[in-house]
Image 1 (spheres, helix red, strand yellow):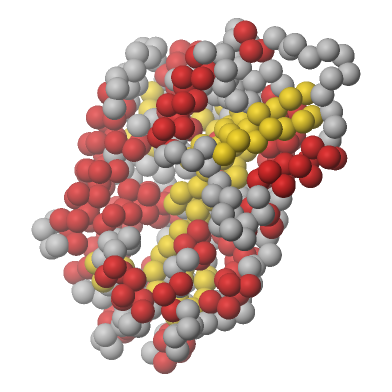
Image 2 (image 1 turned 135 degrees about the vertical axis):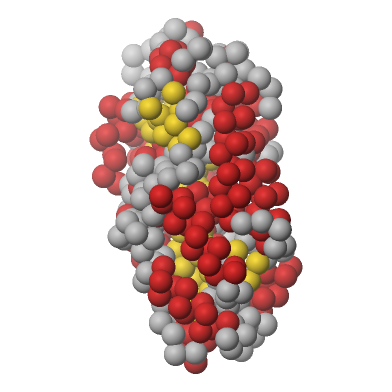
Amino acid sequence: MRKIALAVTLTVTLALAMVGCANPQDKKTEQKGDPVKITYIHRLPDGEGMTKVADIVKRWNDANPGIQVTATKFDGKAQALAVKLETDIKANAGPCLAQLSYNEIPEMYVKGLLQDVTAEAKKYQKNYGGAFGQMTLAGKTTGLPQDSGPLVYLYDAKEFKALDIKVPTTLDEFKAAAAKAAAKGKYIAAFTPDETAYWLSAQTAAAGGVWYKTEGDKWKVNLDSLEAQKVAKFWQDMIDAKSVLTLDRWSDAYTKAIADGRLIGNLSAAWETGFALDGLDGTPREGQWRVAQIPDFGAGAKTGPDGGSGVAVMKGCAHPAEAMKFNDWFNTQVDDLATQGLVPAAVQPAKTPAKMARQFGGQDVRAVLAQANKNLSQDFIYIPGFSAVVPKTTETAAKVAAGNGKVADVFAAAKTSSFQALKSLGLPAI
C-alpha cells in the first residue's frame, strides 16, 4: 500500500480530515428556489428481480422536489472506487454520498475525504442497530450504515433433532454439542481460515472486546485481550477434539460438506442467509435449516460484525443536511434493499423473501436478522489499512487448519500486521 504522508498525531489528522469547508465545492451555486442537488455513487448489484436503485431514488425525487438525487452505479471493484473518490474529491468533482465498506471508512477518514456529520447523524441514530458505530471514528460520525453482517448461527434443525441436541446458548454448550455430533460423524461448525480476519474479530466483539480503538492521539491494538483469548481457546479446544471441520468458507469442500449432511451448522455472517443453502434446493434436505442468534460469548446477547457497508458524506458536499435526510430515507427502505441481497442495517425488519422462507422452512429469517442487528456491538471499528492485515491472518489460519499452529497464532499474526499497517500509514499505535 502506498505510504501516505499524514500528520504526526492522529488528533491532528482527524482534525484535518473533517475540514470540508475550504473546498470550493462547498460554495452553493443554486439560485433561490432551485432544488438542492445530491449525487450518490453506489455498488449495489441492481440485478434481475431486484428493486432497482433508480426506481427507489425516483420515489424520493417525486416526493421531494426540493432535494433531487442522482444515483450512479459503480461497476468496478471496491478498491477502484476508493481511488476514484480520492481523485475526484481532490479535483473538486466528488459525489456528495458514496457507499463504502466499513473497513474502508477509517482510511478514507484519515485521508481527509469524509465530512463530519455527527449532529445530523444523531437525528437518525435510533433507526439503526450497532452498525451505526462503524460509521463513527474518534467521536465523529461520517454517514449512516446501509447493510450489516452480524454473526448469526445457521443450523440444520432436522439433524439437530435426530442427534438430540439443542441450539447452544453458551460456549460450553456449543463445545458439548459439537462433541456429541462429531461422535456421529456430523459437525455443527467449521473453522474457516479464509474468513478469520473478519470472522474472529467479530467473535471478539461478541465477547465484549474489540481489536482496535483510538486512545488519545494513538490507535490501540488490543489482540491480547481476555476476550480475544477466550475466542482463541474456544476454537482451539474444538480443533484439538476434532469436533469441528477445518474448511475454507469459499471452497467447493465447504459447499459439499453442507450438501452431503456432514456440516450441519456454522457461525456465519447474516448476509450468507441469501445464498448459503442454494445447493440444497430441490434435494431432500431443502427447508431443514434455520437461523438463530449466536451463543453467548460472555457479554450476553451481543454479536459482532462481519462485513457490510455504509453511505458516507464526502468532503466537498455542499448540502450535508439534505444529503443525510436522503441517506436516512434510502437506508430505511428495507424491503427494497433486501431485494438487492442486503441485510439492511436499519432496526426495522425487512420482509423475508419467498426463496429464503422456502430454504429456511418458512421461518421469518429477516426478523431474526433484525434482532441480530439490535445486538450488534456498537464499539467495533477497523483500523486504516485493515486490508493489509487480512492476508497474513489468513495465511496463519491455514497453517492452524493443517495442524501446524494454534489459533492464538492467528491473533498474534493479526497483531503484528496491524502495527505494520498503521506504521506504513504514518499513524501512531500502541
